[in-house]
Amino acid sequence: MSMSDVLSFSVETIIPPLGTDFVNRFLCNCYSNLLEAILIALVLGSIIVGTVIGNILVCVAVFLVRKLRRPCNYLLVSLAVSDLCVALLVMPMALLYEISGNWSFGAIMCDLWVSFDVLSCTASILNLCMISVDRFCAITKPLKYGVKRTPRRMIVYVSLVWLGAACISLPPLLIMGNEHTYSESGPSHCVVCQNFFYQIYATLGSFYIPLLVMIQVYYKIFCAARRIVLEERRAQSHLEAHCYLDIEPTVQQHQPAAVNRQLNTDVQTSHGSPPTKQHRSSSASTTVSRPIDSS
Image (cartoon, rainbow, N blue to C red):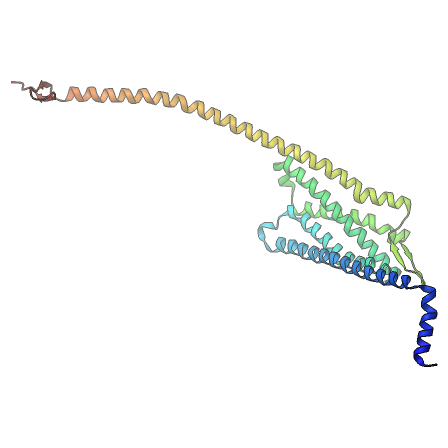
């Protein structure tokens, strides 16, 4: 028996139980999984790169341009920093976890990754909520709130945002623990703490309550802006009507004065000049005026 016969015998003894359909399905699944992984990597990688570049440009613009270094932009910088933390600390590991389907970084990295995920995302949402409240106060009370919008006050607002995000993200890391399942035969997984009461607390504090606040505040901003625009239009139309009524009598008064002035000028001219005598020439119908001799 030759070596080729041995190889053919071994292959024939292995493939018939499995079947050629199984091999084709396996290859198709591998190909589709590879294509899906490449597409996911391209999409999520482009999102990561765009998020990093955009938020870095926001921070650089605020720090370099003098006109942008105002207290009202402190919350925008805080929002950019939170989104930058999501792009740098959370999304790369999430990309690897999504493609491989297995958490291979250990339990400690699982706790840190989940905590940074909750912290950054919650801080981003709370920054949006605080920005909406800040705009509402700036529109409804421009003079009073403009004086109170100091750098110290805005730093306090930013600190409150990150403190609230830490209060939501730290309990699983310090007290409850996140869900990390390790398996030698199967894939390992890493998810946030699945405690029922923590889930209610985290979802209310990091999503639903800020969402309701933003909806209500932006609705009030819309009503206030609409009221301001209507008042400005009403005042402008009222001012134009008054200007029209004031200009019309002035024109009517100036016209008789101009006529009287012209008449007075004609009278003075007639009194100041010597009397004239009019003769009609026989050859033409023109009137010739000449002064009358006093002698």
